[in-house]
Length: 304
Picture 1 (cartoon, rainbow, N blue to C red):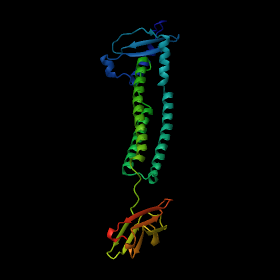
Picture 2 (tube, rainbow, N blue to C red):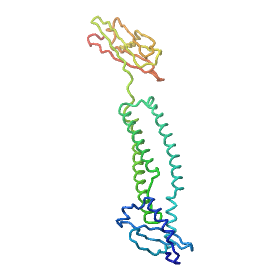
Picture 3 (cartoon, one colour):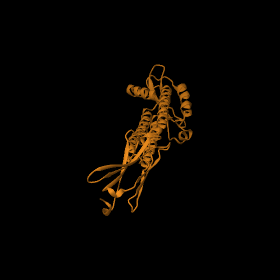
């Protein structure tokens, strides 16, 4: 009966009890063991909202207890958060967000081609791989935090609604906190990836020479890493105490792999105090000429 106007609520409660058991909030075994009592809030035809606590297997009837207006308002506000319409809107928002996150992942995957011109070393590529992994973990945790959750609630129990809401907020807060940490790690690793290694060294240029007892100097330049089909030159510069001499030069064109070989011969290298072999070429994808100089040590007895 209604706790205010004594209206008979038997039929209403008889319909409410099976509906609540079928909803899965209370298990039949729990009800049999008396572990739970079915609590419902219903409004009588005269507009009085009362709470009815019913133990189905106890065989007793209970008079409704009027629900205070503030508790009734709280039930309405909390119930709106768990309403089917609110759940449908949450699913739509999550689907939209997930579509945007998928596009972001696809963009980042395409951006992996940037490593071709970043010239990352082995350690840098490894750090960048960990950065992408951390970003994937971040998006996964963010997805878990935003994903709608199925929950069994008791719409007539404000305490149950508050507990469900609190547990959901705590779980989402933990997932978002971990996502923020993973995102910060991804940014840090991506930043350090460009600083972990210097750009890889260009292919070395080999310089070999031979000096005979008669003073004949034979030099060989093997240039690698030049711009394909660009000019490559080599020269011998000799400096004495009295004058500077320009000795033999050689010029060639790099092949399609950026390689070239030049040979120089100085018949009488004993005439000067120092001999320097100088080679110059334009590096691959470079604008300024690159120069390498190698000084040939001459025995003191051979210098002028």
